[in-house]
Length: 171
Image 1 (tube, one colour):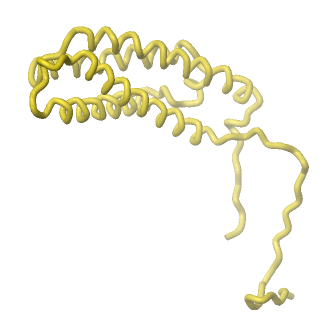
Image 2 (image 1 turned 90 degrees about the vertical axis):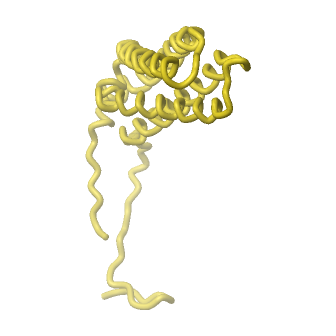
């Protein structure tokens, strides 16, 4: 029944036939993870750069750079987790375009404003420029990424590739 190979007895042979069609299917989870990773990197980088630009040399103390780094990663993670919990990474949000971008901008501005106030009150003095620059950076990034994602995802959502089920048989 089985075929003999150099590695011993093989019980069966699996054959796969190619249909010749190119699949445009990309798993939505892959797209969501890429988007979350991009958001996390942007929010972290923007927070650090804006913090360093708006904190003058006379305002820094011995641990200012470490504090800025910690607050930047905290803000980035809280924003991404909040966007995830509000469904801003779902398939419906991928096709939402500017509506999704507006909700993401509003959420991140609120969270950034809360962190700004708490940092200014309890940790270190921060310039109002931080909040102004934060409010400028977010619409530019989220507008560009969500509009691009929407233009990419709308035809695929209409065709149904985001809804395909794949069954893996065998083991």
